[in-house]
Amino acid sequence: MRNFDLAPLYRATVGFDQIADMMDRVLSSDMGQPTYPPYNIEKTADDAYRISIAVAGFADGDLSVEVKDGALIVSARKAEDDSDRTFLHRGIATRAFERKFQLADHVKVTGASHADGMLHIDLVREVPEALKPRRIEIASGDATDKDVVEGTTVN
Image (cartoon, rainbow, N blue to C red; front, side):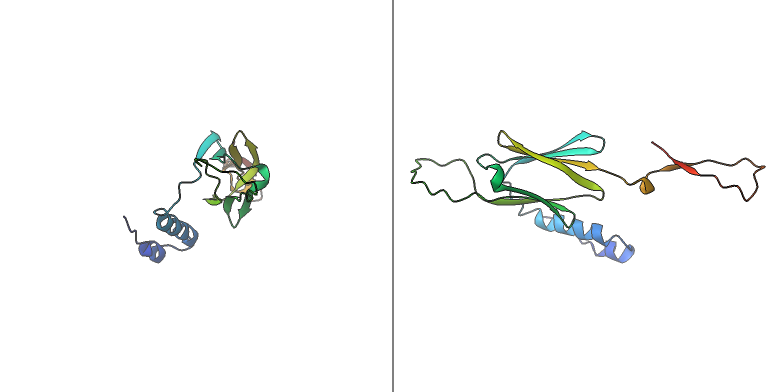
């Protein structure tokens, strides 16, 4: 078990408290993190991601996907089974769960689909034009102070 002291980070930086808080949350909750249900996170393009969660036994109405306070929250609640079935062995887990994924800035959920016991959630990072790198044209030496050169977005 490792303990990290983030106090030097708080003392030496200004404006990075959200990152420090997130690291503190992740490091403190990582030890007791449940493994149910299993999931994959894959990068499908330069700015696109997909989270796939195994949700065998759950119907569309049992699942909930929402974004709240910069976190993607996936939860499932199975309706109580009113039938009088007697199981000799019950190995398919349909217990309720809630799984949280902290989203980076400018990452948005674009859609979710449920097929073949898998819940797929697609995400994309959309960086605003104001934050993209810009190439600034350099004026020649004979330009006057009144000339203004516009920057263009670099792709």
